[in-house]
Each structure stands twice: as C-alpha cells, then as structure tokens.
Amino acid sequence: MNRADEYLAVARVVAAHGIRGEVRCEVITDFPDRLKRTERLYRGETHVPVDLERARLEKNGAILKLSGLETRTAAEALRGQMLYVTAADAVPLPGGSYFWHQIIGLKVRSDAGEDLGEVADIMQTGSNDVYVVRRDGADILLPAIKDVVQDIDLAAGVITVHLLEGLL
Image (cartoon, rainbow, N blue to C red; front, side, top):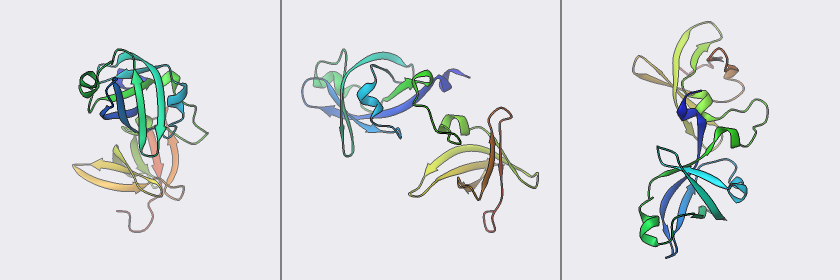
C-alpha cells in the first residue's frame, strides 16, 4: 500500500460557515453518517491531523467544526481542501464491494484474454459507476455492472470483463 492508499477522502471543504470557524463540506463518502462518529480527520495533500469537534449533516453536505479553526477567516483558508480518514478507520464494505482507490490502477482484461488497458478513473452515474479504462491514450468506458465485470482480483491487480455488444 502506498501513502496515498492509506487515506480515503470523505469530504471537500467548499466554504466557511458562520463566524466561529465552521466549514461547509461536500460529502464524498457513501457513508456520511460516519462523520458523526469520527474523531479525527486529515486535511489536505499532506494529511495534517485535525480533531473533529462536531458534525452536522445536511441535505447537500455537512457542516464541520474542526479543532484549531476559530474564525471565519481561518475556515475560508481551507476552501478546496480535501478531508480524509485513514484506511484503517474505513467503514467495512460488504463482500464484492471495493473502494475506488482499490480499483483505479488495476489492469483490465477481457474474458477472451485481450488486454484492454488500465482503470484510470471512475465516473459516477445515476445507476452505476463507470470504469474509465485507458489504453494507448484512448478511453474505454465500461459500466461496473455484473453483466460486464466478471471478476476483480486485487492480489493479481486484474479486472476481468465480458464485453457486451457495443462496448468497444
């Protein structure tokens, strides 16, 4: 596991909230309730530890009070920063589910044995995620559905897919 894999993004600071150092965040975890139970977050690319004093979930995000932020100006300075938890503190996923950082970078192979490239990104759509597979500078978009994704072997670093008609 490299250093980037040790942390999972859970929120992005979008603005200051009020005058007492709270921040308004876009929640980017599938488990927003975890913020109510989390005591420590890590902010920015350098993963500076910060205690989470309180969290209030809202329809379109969360209002967080981070220790050390006492003014609106201090909160404004965090705009755009990501907030993380450690991978060790991650919410356990049900079997057959994976975190994005586990998928991005895996090689993709068809069930016929053709190397298709590597997962470069994941797009969220309304119904399912879509794996963006990069090969020779071109992207192949593969829906992350059971009919397409046959097997994910993290140990081997390979996703095996069945190419439905029209996918290539």
